[in-house]
Image 1 (cartoon, one colour):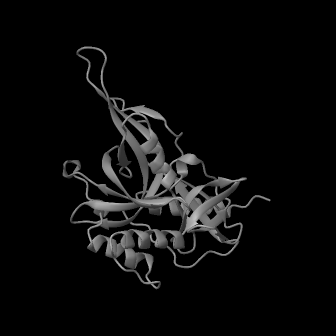
Image 2: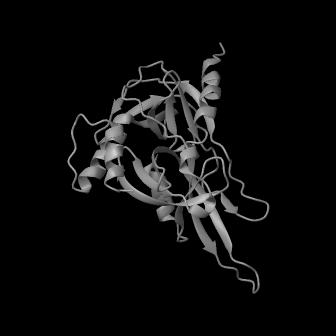
Image 3: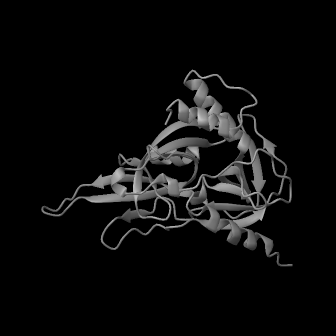
Length: 264
C-alpha cells in the first residue's frame, strides 16, 4: 500500500531548510594552453553539509559535513581549494577544515563570506540538533544535493550546472541506534541517499530538528552520525585547544564556546 507520509514530510521540510544546506566544492584554476585565452575556474562537487552556527558581525558560519567529503577534496590531484556554495546562489566562499572524527565520519568546517558578495550570513538559518534520539518508526527527512560526485563544472557565461537548492527525501527510522566501537552512535533510516548527499541533515518531521548527519548506506540502509557524535566532535575540538568540557554540555553550549574562543 502506498504511504504518502514520507513525501509529505519531504515537501514540508524542504522549504524550511533550503537555505541551510550547502554544497562542498573543490576549486582550482586551469591555466589556458592557448595564447590569449583566459584561464578557467574549474569547480567540482564533493558532497553536502549544513549550517549549525554563525557569526553575523564577522559574516562567518560553521558547517557540519562528513570527514570523507573533505578527504575527497584534499586527495584530489589538482591542488583544489575547499569552497562552499552559498545556499540559493551561484556564489562560492572559501572554507577551512577544522576538527573531525574519522569514525563516525564527521567534520566541522568554517566558511568566510567575502564582503564583495554583498551577502549576509544572517539570511542563512542554522539547523538545530535534537537532544533526544528518535524511536523506530519516527518520520524523518534527508536533505542534500544529489549531484554526481566529481561533476566537472566550468564556470562560464552559461552559468554553473549545480543545483541551486537541495533535494529532500522522506522516510522512517528503521532500527535502534547502532553503537559503534569508536566515537559514534549511528542512526538507521530508509531515506533515499547517494554519495553526493553525504553530510546532509537527517531531520525529524515532528520537531524540525536534526538527529544526524548522513554518512552513507550499508546494504541499502541509510546511516547518519547522531547528535551525540556531533556533541563529542565539538568536545574534541575544544579539548584540542586546551578548553575543558563538561559531560552535561549541550551541542549549543559547545558551539557557543567554540565561537567565543574564536576557533573559527
